[in-house]
Image (cartoon, rainbow, N blue to C red):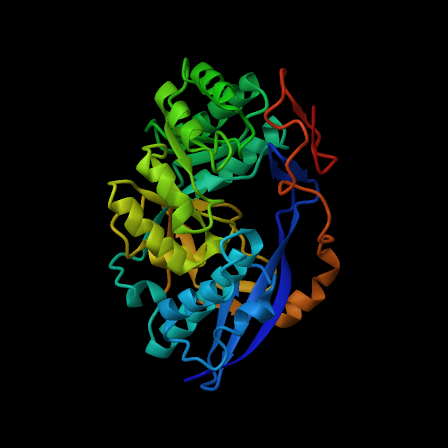
Length: 391
């Protein structure tokens, strides 16, 4: 079997409400979702979700190769792009192609990827993550009640701009999940998306911990700040979770070696091979791993095969427009199906019909860091009518 072709598509995740974090808001809830399709001479097509940046250059490393040689081809792509491949969107392009190759490999074996990778249990524990910073209290409660109705008893909210607002919202979600769990204590996490300095992080979380028990604080300082994460970890009770924006083992290694991270995260967009390698590195240090992403389907399959998977992020309960997934959510977990490969099916007609929903690639949102991030003295209000957070 040989790789013969490549196609790219872009669909949209339609949340039906504002979504965002401390860095910015998508007021209409529409977020672009790029898709990569890898074709073979055996009639099998693999699906990967991720960027198209420099994809022709990356694809040159695998064209004509046997797609079943996934890990070797992953390293071949890294070598091809060694001056850009460990950074940002290009690493995501490698990750998308990597996921498509794993999809083909499992399809060729006639097995779901979770089983081919050696997983025993198709259930992957999940936590609710509503990208909820722009919601008012009623909307916020309704969102997490929906998650609770699917059995979720852990939740991560977006915050970091106002300690009293964060406390109030954490109490709201705690009450929703406690009632749904008949009094059982839920797990609560706060994600601030790199918006604090070290001192801000310790002060903010310390204030919350006067009345709340946080399971983890996520990305409290800049992703590369090893000593900063270690300082935060020493100053609070909650675990420190980070890693979703790190692209490569060499970026995870200093944080892990310094004891600066308690929950090691990887983003779905960086691919399956990256996750598997980070999981081994974390396991060698007795640390858990936790996948991050809107549609982390590839990492869910991989999570079943590693001994240190803790819990996976569950954002929108619906897939992107034009995609169907061979999985469902019940009793607080993703439940993976028996279909071969990743179980991702693409309806190109539906994607084409939704093209008018696609936001412009240069539109604002949570991917743009505000000018005053890390340099604020006072609480910040979120304006859901704009694409930025205003101070």
